[in-house]
Image 1 (spheres, rainbow, N blue to C red):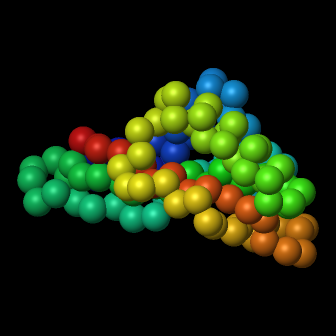
Image 2: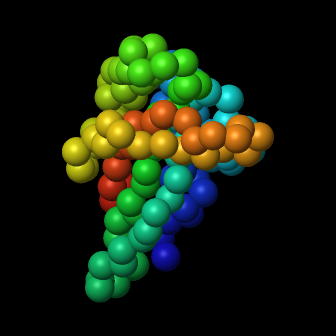
Length: 118
């Protein structure tokens, strides 16, 4: 394989942080409002060198403060994230994410990004 998955994920985290989105790989570090970057899969192209594409989910997560407040916070995170990443699928606006130490799932948007490699 011609890429380091962790390096690619860390680069995306840095990009989001530079745009003002508090982003993490480790769910234990999440402190909403923030983004959780999760590698979903890797597709290898059948060429010499092992190039391919990694699919990554970026979950924008906020504390549950009621629907209107949640939407305002999520929309602000989405605006900042979209300044630096381009979704490869429609953004899901009706997600919930469970995080360590929080008893109920939290409101979230999901952005799918495909990262070409090799």
